[in-house]
Amino acid sequence: MSIQSEIGQADLVMEPSVGDFIQLMKPRVMALVVFTALAAMLAAPGHINPVLGMIGIICIAVGAGASGALNMWYDADIDARMARTAARPLPRGRVTADEALSFGGVLSVGSVVTLGVLVNWTAGALLALTIAYYIFVYTMWLKRRTPQNIVIGGAAGAFPPMIGWAVVTGSIGLPSLLLFLIIFMWTPPHFWALALYRCRDYERVGVPMLPVVAGPDATRRQILIYSILLVPLAVVPYFVGLGGLAYLGVSVVLGVVFLALALRVYVTREGREADTAARRLFLFSILYLYALFATLFVEALFHRLMA
Amino acid sequence: MSDNPNNGKLDPAAEKIRRRRSIAIGLTLGFMVLAFYIATFIRLGSNAANGML
Image (cartoon, rainbow over all chains, first blue to last red; front, side, top):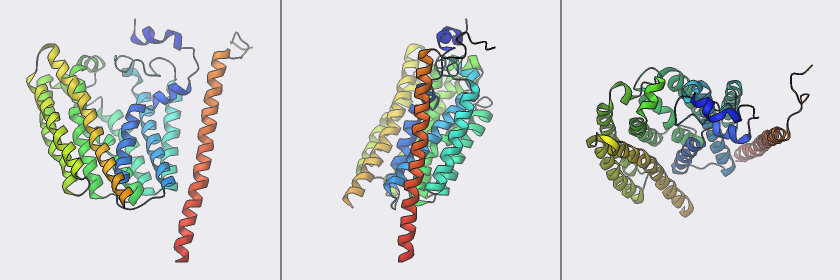
């Protein structure tokens, strides 16, 4: 019996609810996107009317959600065969492929046009680029073809701080490129840690994640290399004046923990302990990124309130 | 003749879900209209202020 028929027989005849469409937008990914964009908006020099700033954030959130819906539309076949994704609305039969495609398409165009018209077209163009990159470059082209899928595709998840920066300044500054680079370097160790303990899932559906193609040991080595590159890079915002002393402290302390967990993943190669080490790094990597941007956010907010 | 045994009518649960969906779409459209209305005023206001300087 297939996973789809196991999960959703009772759901197949139901009308799609508002909750199903919200789930299509990958709310957890949306939250991270909004958070990183908001932190960049606050850290950016200059001023924006708060209402326009709020419209900017909503557009970024909706654009990210639209990407999620289009990704689920395209990947419905493999989502149905993976334990982690089998309960999504499309594999469960709650939402049809046409509904997901229309929903994602309308929201993509709507969010880009609204951001461009009401805020500025630099931000609008960056949002359009992010959606197009995630769907055409990552989902349709790279994901099923190369083990470097998440390295190159990771750029899509790294664009939101640049969009947030552009919302306020109307341009792409070097500091926003730095924030882009931090998320770009964070993505491989984050996803490869997940892929290490979900390896069989990816293997079954033929997605060439690094552990499937190159093996777990090569993946562990790559995780360690990217972590060694990421941790010092994450400290740089302090030296270019983007973050303050609190940011320096958080990025150094959590960076050391990140490296220790990556090292543990590298040396623990057998049995349940290996899976546990990978899972710990995966979960900690989420906390790490949230903490970095939360510190930037709080510091920038503090400076704006004091100014 | 319709294939639907309920003569094209939805059962109450499905009807409730559809109504909620319609309300959500309505609220979203209403929010967009309001956002465009307010943002237009803000942008016109700042442009007018810049023009006077």
